[in-house]
Length: 107
Image 1 (cartoon, one colour):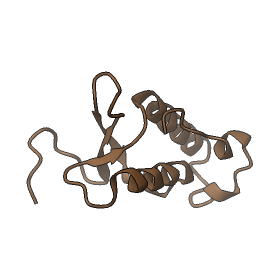
Image 2 (cartoon, helix red, strand yellow; image 1 turned 30 degrees about the vertical axis):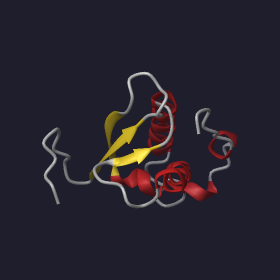
Image 3 (cartoon, helix red, strand yellow; image 1 turned 135 degrees about the vertical axis):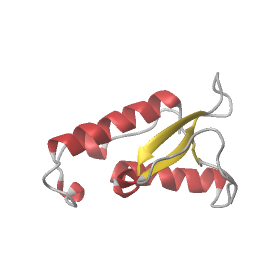
Image 4 (cartoon, one colour; image 1 turned 120 degrees about the vertical axis):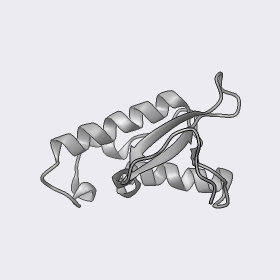
């Protein structure tokens, strides 16, 4: 594996590239906690990424949504995990209408 010269990612975190082909500024790089991978909202975005890019991509994980949508998703996950930090593993049982109605404008 090539070592990433741009930015070292600390243990427990994952580098992702966010953006759309036709979006101004192209792709932006973010680091997210690996715990995001288990969140239902993020899993939906990962499924979309697999449809668009497939599994064989070099470099950071590329997510097919606008930066604005990604920032909104990150805010939602952070808000949810801050409210429920003592209920690990129970994300499926939330009955918030928001957590089931997220749709990415750009995806």
